[in-house]
Each structure stands twice: as C-alpha cells, then as structure tokens.
Length: 384
Image 1: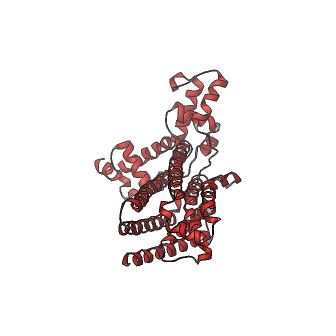
Image 2: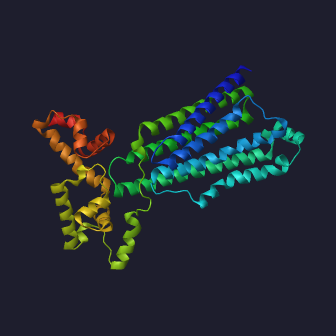
Image 3: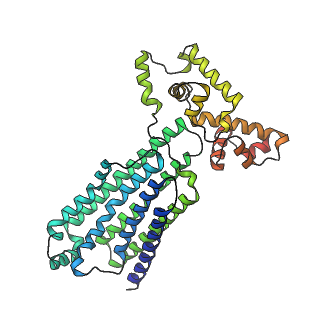
C-alpha cells in the first residue's frame, strides 16, 4: 500500500510540473511559437499519460475514459517528430497531411470499440479487470513499439539531413542544435527501453516490482522533461532554424554535369575559369575577412563576391572538398592562431579572441581549434 501511495505522490508531482511547463510554453513570447506549442502539446499528453498512475478512478458511467486516456501515448512521438522539424527548419509549417500521424491513435480506438467502447458498463468493468491478458493489449504494445522506433529512426534521418544542409550553407552555432536534438533522441531511446522493460514486468514479475518500475519511469520521465525545457529556455541560441528548401550539393551536381555534358571530380580537372574563381574566393577571404561575421551564410558570401550561390556551393563543397562550415572556420582559426602568437595581444582572453574572429560559442571554438591544431587555445598560446 505504501508503494501505491508513493507512486501516487510522484505521479501527482509529475502531472503538476508537466502542466505548469506546458502552460508556460503555450504563453511565453518567442519567435519560434510553433516549436514551443508542439512541445507543450507533447508535455500535456505526457501529463495525461502520467495521470494513469494516480490513485483515481473514473465514475462507472465514464469508465471508458480510462482506456481512452491510455491511448494518448500514441500522440506523443508524432508531436516530438514535428517538434524536431519545427526546431530544425525555420520554414516548417503544419499542413493537413500531418493529420496522417493520427492514424495509430485512431486505429487503436477502433480496435477497442467492439469489445469495450460499445459494451455496457458491467462488461467494460470486466474488460478492465482482465485488461492485461486481452488481445487488444498485445496489439496496443506492438503498435506502440512499431510507432516509437519508426519515429526514432525518422528523427535521426531528419537530423542527418539537417547537419548536411547546415554544414554546406551556414557557420556558427547551429551545429549545437544538431548535437542537442541528437542527445534528446538518444535519451528517448534509453527512456523507451526502460519503459518497455518495465512493461514486461507486468507479465514476468511480481506486482511490487512492477509498481517500483512505474515509480522509476515517472521520476526519470519528469527529470528528462525538466532538463529538456530548461535547456531550451537557458540556451535559445540552440533553436535557430535553417531553411529546409536549401538543396544539398549532391542533389543538383549530377544535373549540372548532365546539362554541361561533363564530369568533374577534382579541382585539377577544372579549366582556368574555375581555378580563377577559387583564387578570387581565397583572396577575398584574406583581404575582406567576411568570416568575422558570426552569422555568415553561403548566400551572403555569394552576394559579396558576385558568384551564384549554386556555383559557390559546388566550388567549396565539391571542388575544394570542404563543407562551407569548415571552410569558413579554417580562416577564423588561422586568425585566432595569429592573435594567440602575437605578444602584443597577450592581454586578450580566449573568450575575447573567439568573439573577435567570428565565433560566438566557446565550445564550438575549442572544438574547431583543436581540430586544426591538436591543441587547446590556451595550450597553443603557451607553446608559442
């Protein structure tokens, strides 16, 4: 009985905090309203899911709400999937086709109709009494597993494409968005694995062990939600979306080759015009230092040197065999190295230097610096 009381207390805290956070996300003023609202909906449905652990029973005439509530978990992963889209891509909008993600939720409730929803109150109570052994439950568990792993894999694929688009078109600091969402998805994998193991205890272990499994699940879920929301609130720079319509170089390169009836793989295969473009680009980077702009994009650089953005993308990502992200950061790191070696600027801190050369993230600067020098900025300065 003590376990049930403890579980009820933990569940009440989880429901209260979840709904409080959801209310905040629904009402807070932000540019990325769609992402916030999608995540708020996810938290709300999670709270509804947690409410199933409360020491509370619906009146007999509304007993069908108990089962209906349990099916709301089928709406959680579609919301996270759409949330990732909204965070990654600034041009993402909800469309009617997204209603297709409701299909598992609708199918599950249709499956429950013949032997539950359409039955009398007494028959519904009998159904709930032996719920864990009903065929509908096995179907429910299989549906949850299939849906969950489908969305987990889909999110990883979204992030892979997002990273490629970002590296070919942007610099600083949205790789942090990729890392954060990747971590989030990994956490969901771990959480679901624990939840799935807990559900197996329903059939293979004692009720006490199952109850403690529920307690552990709610505490971990609550911790993850709080961590996730606080991360988003404390680090808004992580959630600057990019344009999903930007093509990858590989998407249009074959078409260009076909139109020009030629195949080019390395800079050495290019004519003097291409080599001249590379020289102009490098000279411009050295003389004008456009990389000092922390928000520099390939579109902006193309406008500055009067080269079509598609040609510039092919030039950097294909001919020079570099992502735009690495290409720009290489100049930033080189300038940072010169500053660190300059004795007259020894009073500048590493933080001041990273801002001066175009970075606005210490972690991104340290990672890039170590990639090119195998040393931290401080170690490089001491060795100079």
